[in-house]
Image (cartoon, rainbow, N blue to C red; front, top):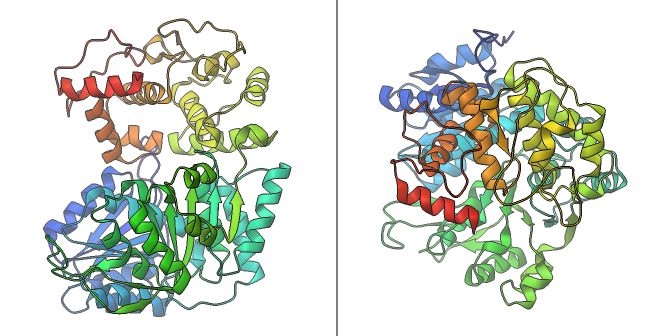
Length: 528
């Protein structure tokens, strides 16, 4: 019987999940362990797969990060053994011996994803977070198993739909009921899906729902953030390349389409791909084939394509920035996500969900919303949609001392639309407001853009936890590396525990002597 140990201390932030790192190189193993512990995971490490298998049979781990080349039992055999035992875990393989054959074989035998050495720390954190989400979505069904495409059963579909509530896809409004119905109709097919909606409406959640309810649910869902692609490397990232295909191509690389074999690929914000690559993507959708960069060999694309965008595609096509023929190939089954302002009482359901999640993350008693707060949430126009609601509820929970959250606590954080008065002035500069039960040191800006409010929230949380990066990141629901990057952008010294007031970032604040040029650029970007 597998057991899950309890957290070692009530004073520690709750763990984001359990990870086992298996690598015979101690330096690499300890490096991975350190990164993942800093990100808030409970991590153990072992030097061999032979040691790891008995531990996995006794103790439940959500994710296993393993090397490929190890003595006694290599990574591929390790995955086969976990598959035979149907262990409820997700596997990420890390190796310096990157070959297309080993990557595809690892995915075929059940690996969630594949990472090459020297690995990028941010990429490692992203992969573990996605693997953890899949583990939590599928529960004990998330076993290591070969990629076999089968029809989804009704019990599995019902379980996946129930799990969507826990992931944040919550709501009983007519718009959400229609969206759920569309997802249940679309998911069992292999048709291409285009998800459209404003920023913050939950497009990635819908993509995961479509995949979880599909015949390909046992296969991987490989995500690609299109705005992060450079034009020079985008084709290689999508389709892979052969060694020597271009300067710097020192080894074969496995592309996302090949990694997603038997599963699905999510092209997030697809309108950000440049026109030449759009033409190549069109061919993949038309012919279901592709070639690696530097190779003439044609390969089959056994992949379902899911794309998302927050842009007006008609305007993008009219402006010559997006191919009309590609649009028609993508929009076989379009899914429109409703903005939060049109979802009625869903706002209250989501607020309660975020209150529950914040209480669990902060290891505190659940806070309540006062009646006037619920009225304010219902009246607000939510330009940032569900993401904005989550940020505001989380911020209120972090800064609140235990009293019910009143309208006056959150009103200063809401963007005031022209012609509507929420009861506070919006003159030049910033006002500050202190949530009840908080302290003056945790005051936040009453106006300004989302970047300003994000900075204020991060600073206030750092102050609350005495500058502890790990606890702050866990409370905010972000990685420690992400938090450190934002602190550098704000001009804070690496080990400082002095952050000033969170409201102290108007145009006349004194810049930190650490990297003042970057801080000035960031300030100009926020106020532009």
